[in-house]
Amino acid sequence: MPPKPLSKRSLIGLIQLFEQSSQSITDIDGRSLHGFPAWDTKDVENFTKQDLATWTQCIGYAGCYPVPCGDDRVLADLEEDDDPDQYRYCCPETFCTKYVSAERVAIHAVTVTKFLDYLSDLLKILPSHRRGSNEIEDVLWQLGKMRVADAQIEVWLVRGLRLHIDPVFEYFQKAVLPDSGLILTTGRALPGYIPPPRSYRVVPIVDVLVDYGAAPVIDVDRIHRVLLAKHGTGFTKTLPVLFDPYTKTLTISTKSLEPWVVTGKRQIAVVQYLFDQYSNGRRWIPAREIFIAVYGSSKSGRSQHIQSIFKDNRYWKNYIVSDDKGLYGFNLD
Image 1 (cartoon, one colour):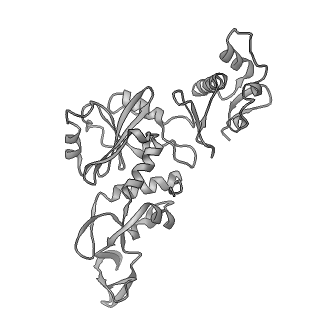
Image 2 (cartoon, one colour):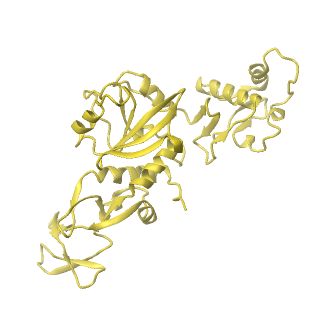
Image 3 (cartoon, helix red, strand yellow):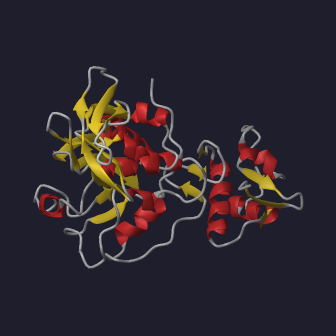
């Protein structure tokens, strides 16, 4: 069964934990593991225990644990206890033996394949275009090709970029790779004075999530502008309404609605016109203006009401509303 969809805030928390896993942590047996200790998840907003169980796996137990010492915290070495559900350590203040639950000192790692599949779904990478290959161990993955405007763009995912910038940028100099593509990072944006390799663009995932709405939605329009612009160009995020003219999909991110794949020549024309006008700052459009955009000067086969154009779709009013004065617009509230 596929995992329950994450809220946008939970996804941001998961991205944060995935990035944190680029740094190693020593376990109870002295091994260096790529993961994060369970006690750190309390600082991750909206990432629940259920999310932890769904999206991560326990890969070991920490070799030390941060404990209070005066006004500070220090790392105390952990030891295995006869009770497998707990570990013990020597209190640095009292020198007495104290205990901490195994659950709290567990080291977790994000389940990479599940995380990559989820991101690929968000990016709408078709199964036939997915790769999911680990190009640099635990650092760089090739996700596959996503559609941006009328092109198929290769997409990679990188974590710990600031720690591994040299091998990552060297990888993208390979002659067998395309000259351009999208490198998504789970960390922060690189400083503007660091140019990307060749004509690639490096963008934090959180920067291409639409601001509006509780569910995560990828801002494909912003990705398109980033790919076309010169390195270092700043962009504002896209409006809460997105209409993809290639897939004919309308997404309203302020509502908990499934994206609407619009069908039918006239219906597509209505949605396209409303979207074009909304993009230019016009929220409400007169019905007569919509009819002119849809039918032009044609008199034959012309509907008399907007409702008639959508008569075979009972869900259209979830996405398009009227102000009862002959004006129509997207249902944002």
